Length: 348
Image 1: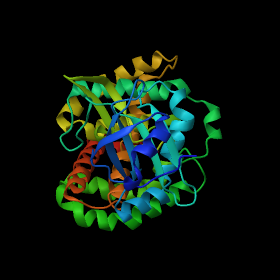
Image 2 (image 1 turned 120 degrees about the vertical axis):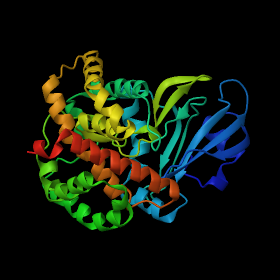
Image 3 (image 1 turned 30 degrees about the horizontal axis):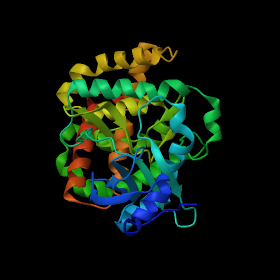
Image 4 (image 1 turned 135 degrees about the horizontal axis):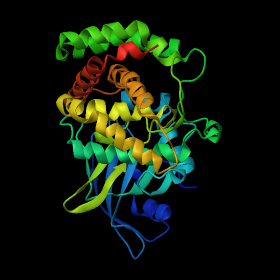
């Protein structure tokens, strides 16, 4: 069995065994700014049937980020998503040539199709309404095929917040990480956003325990940095990558999470109702009928998912100037989203 490797072990012999062909590796470069993993583009020379390049995903070289990836089962979940879920949903993902997760060390490797010339979105810059529309329609291709599918409970590796005590557990994490988050990011927040942050803290457990509605496959971190978009040179319209937090939960969390941080606030306010209508129409293509007012209420409620991600995730990965700028953008936009939508009123 071909097992997980370090970057230094990615050789022509290893690639030949993975791709079942005589392959010569002819160049490796790091791509993206993965905070929990290391992404490499490897150019290849070979005969027919072998791609010109592949993307190889490995654990982060940063020890803090690697420890987070192992402890939170991110590496395990991503490999198992490609093994068990990817072929059962319609969302576009890269073809997986090889995946392995080492149960002993927690390390992993994935060898995926290189989607170039498609390019990664930019979480810090945000996106246009048209790009958001593409991303939201693509989400329906993830959620629709397995909407309320009871067999998803058979996949233990999917993240869930449905067990007794999950609310208290998340509330404890919030209390643990909020001081560190505030020390770095409070200066980025306006007064209304700061008040929202503090008002939500005592309601975290209520937010978790009061969740209701249909369940389906979720991405868990559906944002611009984890999406690839077509360029003038080509590529599919949207490809979703970084499946380290696949879940079995509320589909609307993915929708609110993307809109909350992907769009600049003024664009989001103008477009979010129309984007939800696009999402409903796309779900209908999978035989899923969603009430518009229910969807709007859930969207308001689930806006807090991005706030939780900003507070917790910012404290468990290695820091850099880029990561601080990204989490600052996420925190300010997600909190403004909650302010704009009066999200506290619908926690229940």
